[in-house]
Image (cartoon, rainbow, N blue to C red; front, side, top):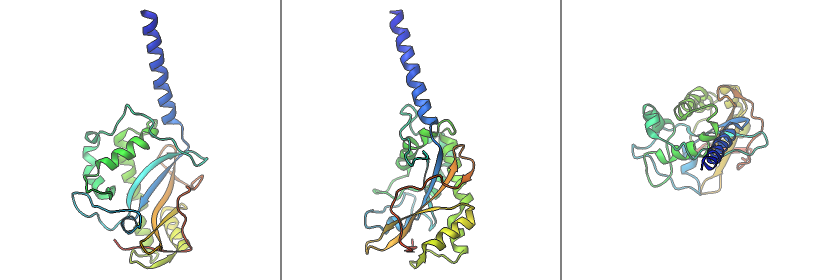
Length: 228
């Protein structure tokens, strides 16, 4: 009986160590923001606002994602640490403003935040607990301020088309680092500004040049910046 108990304890310790290793094993973060006008104007997405109302016409957070230098990424690293809204209760109003869900049906945002924490956040437990994961990501949005950087370069979300290089240059001027731009298509098949990726070191403290860019939908040389 004693030997069986010791074996069980040993297996549980190994399982815990394996989970910890997975959560620590990454090289950098992608910080991803999306333009809600492109999400809602896509030919692939239906769009619903939070139950608290339509968000502001500003970039919103998609997520903070641990990544490997080869372009792959860890996911769902700790099923024993599910999302718990009570741990971020002081951040909720800020989250609804800067990290809103646009998926249907209309909701309070918690299912989106739960998905982001459980798929991506649990893989950064060597750096963040739940509160610091969300708090840090909210701070990054304020730090990078994409819309301000674009407007400073005369790039407005007015449905006009702009040079992809000018968009990248404006964001680099504002943030200090080269972004990766992901596009989607509107219902007429026009390429439009959808998501902006910037990178952080594995401490989650410092923006860096991206070691590798993702494999999402590439943009044409001229892209629309849709209204919202």
